[in-house]
Image 1: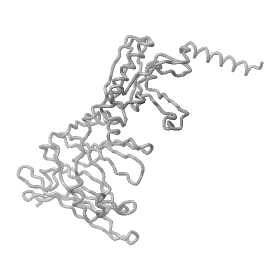
Image 2: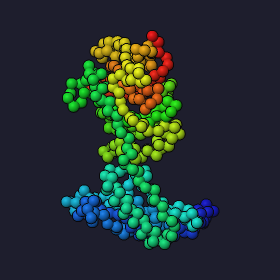
Image 3: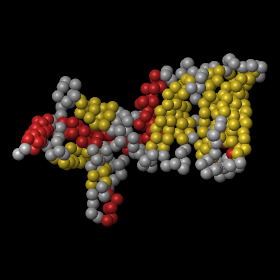
Image 4: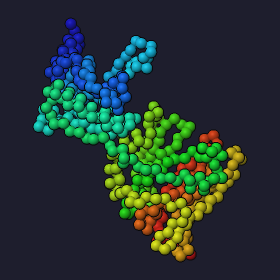
Length: 386
């Protein structure tokens, strides 16, 4: 035997020996999982049962004994009538974002953590609550089965009642941009959905835009923190899903990102609105009635057979203080049809407001055109000229 072969053989046996002493040789792992009863709905009395599963694994360590509860458990069938059950996962604990982990095993701080705070699923809230109860039961059975005597800790699922509420801007936007509506009764525009999250005492606002990405097959949601003094975006988070979007929606996004977003809002001192409202016409503050005006210039483009914006100016005025420009933009290659200020979002009793501006952009193949929103900050005290 040459030296190279001898060296490889020794290395192989050393690897096997190392793996053997660092893990147990349990090739078959038994553990409990929650499964739905074939004859019942999940919410029925007998809709979920605990099933003792058997999985083949190369090596089984205590972490696997506990964490296996979230693994896929696939069943198969030779019957044609049950073809939809072929390669079907029956483990209700196999949910995106759900973690069941054994941490610091062998120490005094040893604990089993069931964390459902970042779950993404299409189960109803009541179904999810029931499933998690059975995941908890199964986890404790697995701990007992494998003699894991650590402390059990649960980080509970996100409260769905805390979902942000969309602000209805469509009525005002459709009215302001009616000239560019498609004429289709149920689809005058393809429009984004706007969710205000809160504001800070030093003039910052946080909001979410849920984009209508038609005709692209994707989900796109962005979260912003904006300075209403400079109008600069201070922080932005993007949630984009381009595959398997059938069960992905705003709720899925919020369940996955709410912790990171909430932490960022705290960092910027942003708190929820006490009295969130949208003022689509004039806004009165300390006996002054403020109104908005939109001034724009457009150029006809022969290749498109229509006009597109060259520039846009938004002004804020009041009879007592005068008028001022709060936003001015120039466009070159953009396909923007129109831009109109449609109303105010008061920051409760603050002397600064968020002005909502609606943009109509040419649709991918013509009408219905795309409707989006910009936020512009404005002081109600300074900068006016008579």
